[in-house]
Length: 309
Image (cartoon, rainbow, N blue to C red; front, side, top):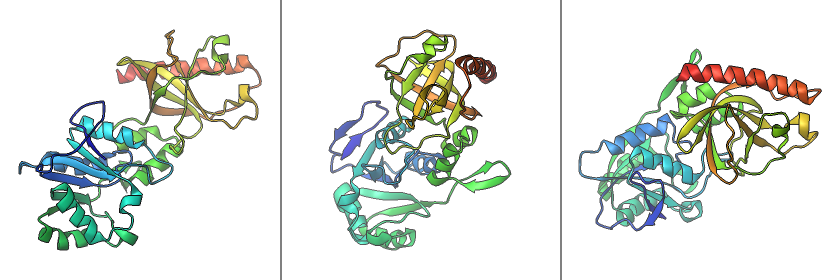
């Protein structure tokens, strides 16, 4: 499947004109993190009249995944990439490395490949960057290989990768996650019905679901910002099973209280951005104890929101 991105928030499936010559970044792009951005910056900076494109998979390969493929394409579109070519793993998994490169050249009119130094491809992952450098020129393609990007996390400089970002999210380290992604981790989705218990303690919440297979942050309470109709509001979000009110339930909820607002958001698409981890989820002895703790969480979130303004 080929998509026209070009800054549009609605993905449109197209056939790339066969005469269009492409500079193409290759990869899964899960998270579209700052390491991926180095590849994207390279194709966008091309000065040879080539059209920017990414080649990626049409479904998440790694589980849990950071972003759905559709969301990855939206991010790539916002960055300015013109086209995305999304292929199923089943279609390409048995291609030899040489067949894959030939496919890029002959079928997609790729004239320049951009990839990371650890990129592997072809059946049994037989192809690597040395193979690309050796074989691509004979197929009419030049090659740019980008070295890994490193980020300072605490006292260490760590190689940026989707695996590292999954680890940070699962540990609730949202400040570090933002540094690695180049943006905040967020949950974007339709607000669904909850049990309305929040309203009984004067803390109404909106409920969202994590997509099957998506990374779920460490259970607990987070400082968040909620985006509704392009307006940002301070918020607090609980990720977990709500033990005070749900007993032994194992259903994981993403439940957000927008501070100081009374908005009817059922059925609307809302974005919740995770700023920082506040505390672990715990079972309180009473709803009043829960309410008191939420008030303290709200005070902290409002203070942090003001500092970010």
